Image 1 (cartoon, rainbow, N blue to C red):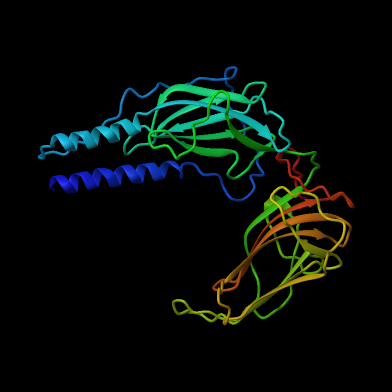
Image 2 (cartoon, helix red, strand yellow):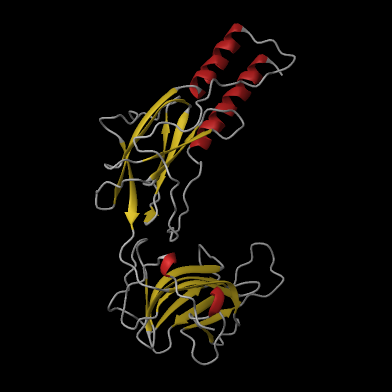
Amino acid sequence: MNRKRIIIVLVVLLIGLLVGIWKWQRPQSKPIETVQKARPQAAAPTKQTGTPPQGVSIPDIPGHKLSEQDKVNINKIVQVFSASIDFWGKVIDQHGDPVPSAAVHYSAADKYFKDGSKYEGTSDAEGLFSISNIKGAGLYVRVAKQGYYHIDGKSARSFGYGMPSGESPPSKQKPAIFVLQKMGETEPLIKLETGGVLVPQNGTPHKLGLRRERGRLLPETANGDLQVELWSDYQPPPPHGRVYDWRCRISVPGGGLVERVGEFNFEAPIENYVQAFEFKMPATTERWQPSLKKEFFLRLADGCYARINLNVISGGDIFVTLESYLNPKPGSRNLEFDPKKAITPKP
C-alpha cells in the first residue's frame, strides 16, 4: 500500500465515522407509547458522569513509513476526534414550558472502531442542562422523561465539533432546544397486538375481535368488532418482481371508521365516519406494493371507540397484523394509552 492509498483509507475512515455520528441511536418513527423511565441523577445542570477520554489513538500501519505530510494529515484526523466540547441544552414540552428532571443521554464520537464515550445528566427546574470538558468529533444528545413522548427530530439531535456543520455550537446564552410531548389525561384502555391472522384471498369476510385475552387477536364468527375482506390474484411460487391485482375492504359491523392523522392525535372524532374503507392495487399501478399500512379510529356498534394500526399483506401467507387500543367506556373518545392503566381483556 503506497502513501497515497494510506491517506485515502484514512480519509474514508474519517468520513464514515463522522457520517455515523448522525445515525447513532435514532428514535423510532412510530410514536413511543411506552414512556421511558429516567435514571436517578444529581441536580442539574449536570457535568459528565463518565471519565473524559485522554486522547485518540490512530491505527498503526505496520511496515509502512509515514512521511511528514502523512503525519500532518493523520494529526488533523486526531484533532477532529479530540475537539473540545462544551454543550448547553434546554428541555421544553409542546407548549414551551420547561421540563425539569428529564434524563439526558450523551454519546461523544471520540473513538475509532468503537462506541463513543457515554455520559448522563438531568435537566434542572428550568429545563436546562450542560456538559463540559469532554472531547469528540461530534455529540449526540437524547432527552427522555416518564410521562412524555419522544418526538422525532426534536427529542434527540446531533452536533458537530471536530467538523462543525456551519451552525454555531450551543452556548449558555443560546442553548439547544429539545422538545418532549407531555402525556394528557388518560383512561383505562384494552391494548391488543397480533403477529398475524390468516385471511382468505377470495373475499370471504373475516371478523376480528378487539377484546380478547393475553394480547391475542382471535377470529370471531359472529360478533367481531372489525371485518376484513381481501381479494388477491397472488399465485405461488411468485417469480421475482411479479405483480398482481389485489384489493381489500375494511369495515366495522354496525359502526364506522375514519383515518387517523397526527402522531399525537388520541381523541376519536365525533363525525365523518364511513361504514367501510376500500383499497385497490391493480398490477398496472406505477408504484405497486404488496401490502397496506393504515391507522384508523373506530366507532363500534356498542358505542365504544378504538384506534388501530393495521397492516394487510396480500401475497404468500395472506394475513393481517393489528395493534388496537379500545376504550370500553361507551361514548368516551379518549384513546391515549397509559401502560399503568391497561385493562386485562376478558377471556
